[in-house]
Length: 411
Image (cartoon, rainbow, N blue to C red; front, side, top):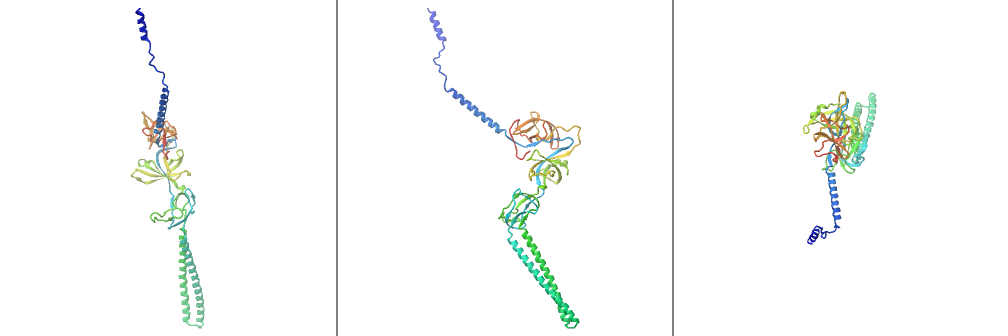
C-alpha cells in the first residue's frame, strides 16, 4: 500500500508546471520593425558618408605615346596662350564719349570706327581755321592784283622816261612800288600757308574725336560707355577712363611656357613641339619653338620660352592654360619603344608595386604598371595605352574605386 502513494508523489514531481507561462506578447513584431528601420537608416547614412568622403579632387594628365622612329617627347612644360599683338584702344585727347560701337566678341577691321567723342569744340575750331585761310587767300589775291598793276605802271614809266615825258624819279617810284608789293605777296603767301596748316591741325584734332581700330582683331573687353570721359592719361581721381576697349589680333596668338633651368639645354629654337590645351585635353596642336627668352626667373628657377602655334583655330583663346611637350627626332630603332610617357608624379608605390590611377568617369581605377627609365621630366611606363587619362599626383589616401572630381582647367 505504501508503494502506490510514493509512485504518485514521484509522478507529480515529474510534471511540468505550466501555470506561470503567458501567451505570446502582441508587441514583439513592432520592436522588430523598429529595429529593422534603424538598421536601414544607419546603412543609408554610412552609404552617404562613403559617397561623399571618397569624392577626392585631383588633377589629370594624358599619357603620351613615345613614338617609334618619329618625334619623341623629351620634356614637358606648362604655360599660357598669349597675344603678341594686343592693345587697349583709347582717345588721343580728353573728351566725352557720345557713342561706343563695340561689344565683347565683335570682330573689327583695321580703321573701323569703335567710338566717337563730343566734337563740338573741334568742329568750331576747324571752321574758324578754314575762315582764316579763306581770308588769307583773299588778301593774297588782292596784293597780287596790286602787284600786277604796279608792274604795268612801271613798264609805262620806263617807256615815258625813254621818251623824256616823265622824270627819272617817277620811274624809281614805280620800281619801288613793284618791289614793295612783291614782298607783300610773298608775306601773304606765307600767311596763307600758315592758315592752311592751321586748318590741317584743326582737322587732325577733329579726327581725334573718332576712335578707330589700329589693326584687325577681336574685342575682348569693353571698358567705357557713352557719356563717360576718356583720356590718354589717368586723371580726374579715377573717374576718367583711360581706354574704350581692348582688341586682340588672334593671328598673333602664341604660347609662353616656363621651363626649369636645369632642362633648358634640351630646348632649341625651331624645335618641334606639341601643345595640349587644358580645355581640350584630347586635342594635340602642332607647334614649334620660336625663341628662348635670354633671361631667367631667379625666384622660380625657370626660363621663359615662346612657342609658335602651327594650326590656328578659333578655339584657341588668350590666357588659356596649356601644356607643351618638346619633341626630339630620334633615330629609327629596331622595334618601336613600348609604353607611354607620364609625369613621374603620376606613378606611385602601392603594396610594393608601381601603380597609376586611371580616370574612369567619376571613379579612379588602380592599374599596376611597369616603370621604365625616365625621359627628362617624364617617365616611361608599361601597362596603359596612349591617350589614357590618369591622376597627375595621386593623394596618399586615394584607393581603387574612389570617387573623384577633376579640377577645372586640368586635362
